[in-house]
Image (cartoon, rainbow, N blue to C red; front, side, top):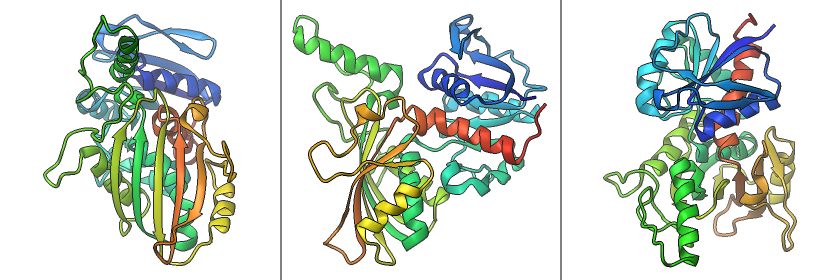
Length: 340
C-alpha cells in the first residue's frame, strides 16, 4: 500500500528531478500523475522505468490524491495549491509563495522535522530556498552544540537556480565567445554570465540587499532560530549545477574546529570532505546528482573569540529543491498520513 502522488510542473528541471528522486528512493507510490501547463500537455516524462504523459494542471481534480509536489512558480501555485489543499491533498510547494506564512511550516527534515505537524492549518508545507536549505543542514549540528549567534555567508549559485533559461544562456554565451560571429546578449541575467560572476539574484530591495539575500535571512530564522543574526551576499556564477557557500559562524560557546568536524560527520544529510591538501575539498561539479550537503575547509576564525569558517556545497536541484520536497513527503508519510 502506498500513496497517490501528484507532481505539478513535471516538465521543468525541478519537476523532472522530483520524479527521478521519488523513483530512486522508492517512495511508496500507488498511483502518480505528472501535471503541466497546457503548452506542455502530452509531453512525456520519466518515472523510474515508466514513461508518463503529462496531464493538464488547469483541469486536474485533486480529490482522492494524497500528496502534491508543486514546482510551478508562485503565480500558478497561488491558483492551484489552495484548490489541491481544499480537496484534501497535502501540497509540498517549492515556490516562495508560502515560505513566510506563519500558518505554513517551512521544513528541512534534518533540521526542524517536528514543525511538520503545522501542515494541518492550511494543508500546505513550504520548501525553502535552495541556498538556505543546504546552509541550515550544515548549521543545525553546530547550533545544537554551541548556539550560533551570527552567520555571514557569501553564495556562489549555479545558473540552474534560474531555471532552463539560465542554463541555456550560460551555454549559448559560452559557445558565442569561441564563435564571435554569434553574439548572445544577456536576457535572463542582468550581465553576461559566461566567464563572469554577477552579485545580483532576484530584485533589489530598499536597503540595498537583494530578495535572494533577504530570503536567506528570513528563512534561516524561521527554520533554525529566530534569534540568529544573518547577513548574506548572493552571487550567480558560471556553473551549471551546484551551489557553493562560504559560511562564517559566530557561536555563544567556543567550538574547536576539530570537534566541529566530528559533529558534522555524525549529522544527518552532511558529508564532510576536509583534507588540508590540494583537492581535499568538494567543488560543485562533484556534488551533482548526490543527496548530501558537503562540508569542507572547516577552520577556526581567529578574528573573533568563538568563530568558525567552512565551505558548503550541494546539488541545488536536489537538496535545494526536489530532494528536500521528497524528504518532506517521506516525513509526512511516516508521521502524519496513512497509506491508502
